[in-house]
Image (cartoon, rainbow, N blue to C red; front, side, top):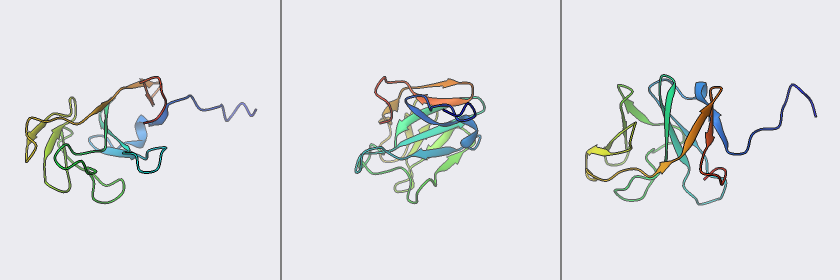
Length: 122
């Protein structure tokens, strides 16, 4: 094994710096047809959710890895303009107001983000 290329840790999703500060990054699902993950970032904090809008159970983005984020606070569904808070996924405006995105447990270690549900990537 090359010491410069250590084996990746199980559940690795992305580096924190892969996500634009105040923005989002799409992590594709390992299984075809399964929903991916959207990871949102504010500074050194990040939150992850299944990339599924609770309004119609469709992805939050219209184009691959293209998300609408506002003021590093809100993530908008590209289809129906529902607005979700970064920190808890709660919909605060739009057709599914009061619903929430499904959280994906993550942990950040040395600026790398890992799925923390014990099963690897969703």
